[in-house]
Amino acid sequence: MVRLPLTPAEAERGQRLGALLRRARGERSMLETALDARVSPETLRKIESGRVATPAFPTVAAIADVLGLSLDEVWAEINQQEHAAEPAGPRRSAREWLAS
Image (tube, rainbow, N blue to C red; front, top):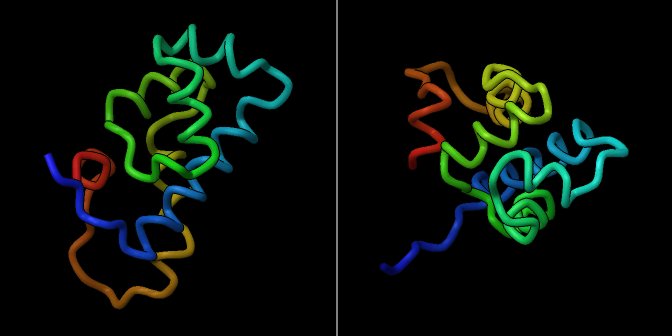
């Protein structure tokens, strides 16, 4: 499967997602968080660093659950700056965005 290059907007969203997860994790170890979410520590590290800017929806949902974040909070945070610059139009749900 060939992955298309990320757009600048997707890369920025990935950076915001990673920053949100790092803040929510706080002092909790990356290893503990990853194991509780049933993802590899390397996967969590890549998401937090923005190297995986478009992680799978179930992965984000599992990490958010472990960190006590609602998916609404995640969606609002990662799209906050993007919506300020976008013209009004149809919005995609968190599930639609994360699935793309």
